[in-house]
Length: 213
Length: 213
Image 1 (cartoon, each protein chain N blue to C red):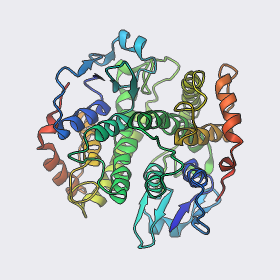
Image 2 (cartoon, one colour):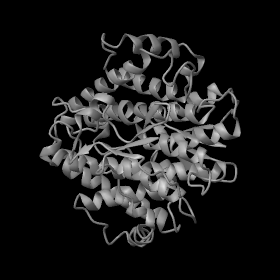
Image 3 (cartoon, chains in turn yellow, blue):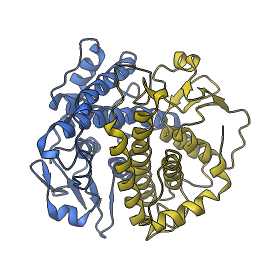
Image 4 (spheres, chains in turn cyan, green):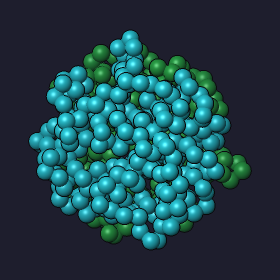
């Protein structure tokens, strides 16, 4: 089994944290495909959509998307449960996992990909394409979007210890990766979000948070 | 049980089609919260993030996110299976469902929400907010994004009858909603994507494709 990983991608970190939380020992699984902030041409040749992470099974079958990969691991290794133990808990894990990606990670990616010269041909994730131009106005709007996202999860974390209720789940993993990506991009958790700060400190202390490729 | 629905939202259509494909008879489940292209203020009061669809259970529990809602229905009513019957099929359904949302629906939403005056305070989905300004440059870039998305699914549909393989799944539902949303926004399937056209014709003929609120 191989996991194609780009060290800077929050979507790869979601999967690496998930594997560590599962307690899985998968030595040598990680194949780093980043060349600094760029992707290695050999990876793009192998996987033309150029999106990571990609899981490769021992028979050569490959599939991408963090959500597909963590579900696959959860089915092979059900314990500890990270995607929800009942239909209703699974609904809440999914519901609170989504804004971490759709608003936190995507909003921060708008800031980063429209600001940095190295992304001049990758303003959107995926295959390099000069036609997909950087839009400077998205830098500020991406920041607004992340602030709105932080206020949204503040509402949830003001009432719950973790994102989907009273225990740690994949919803916490995706949202931690989102918040840390925003911090990496120079944003900070505003004072009006004390519950996000409290939760961020708690989940950052888990050994899995130090996941690296 | 109630499903809060906005008639124009492709994310609501994903859930409505899923329910019809399941053969579920849920009369009166749909509560329409759109007032034309706007959202009813009473809905925003009830659900401040102002994102649809929202499912309300008989005990008053509510949760949002199309993905969470369809998973919940799949667990309550396993047949016919729409999210994958084995771990590997579930991985492929998830993998191919994602670009329908992340690239097709989101890309088209960039076109629509940055072009239409009615979205002047909703350039991003969710609560109306004048600070989240429309960015005209996103209209063209959104179209580029959708064309790139169509070329991506062409690659898959050139080798498979349906999005995730040889049978109809939720991956087809989300991608049909994405392609129809792009058509609604004035885009068209380019000639270089004959497999998308072939697949679009086949899935559009299913009774569930006529799902309305």
